[in-house]
Length: 114
Image 1: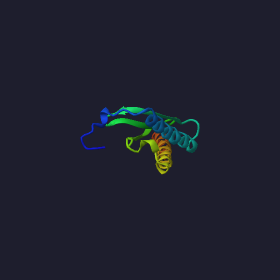
Image 2 (image 1 turned 90 degrees about the vertical axis):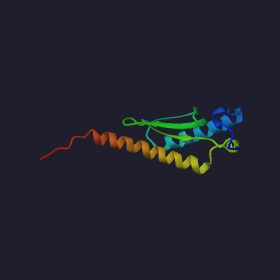
Image 3 (image 1 turned 120 degrees about the vertical axis):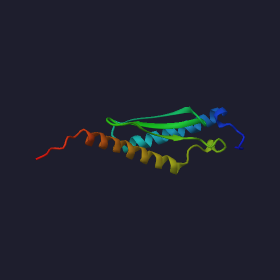
Image 4 (image 1 turned 90 degrees about the horizontal axis):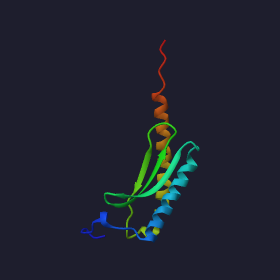
């Protein structure tokens, strides 16, 4: 896109929206594979400040939610989210969600003194 294009005004075509949602759904499914069932994983397309954006979020059973966003390259969106990006983001989200649980649990443990 040229420098004078305001991406906030860009609308996704039906094909672009499908490609982005399919990529997000794949990342969400892969993230679920790394985590126990107690973690809730969701994916959606939102209207970001820079135009449409894909977001994947994980809510662990305890601790803060974690998320990752994809701002699509509108010219290459028909290709969807690159395979290596799907796997890497899924791994990072799962690891971040597990860390949230670990931190929440360790914060809740009161050290015992002698």
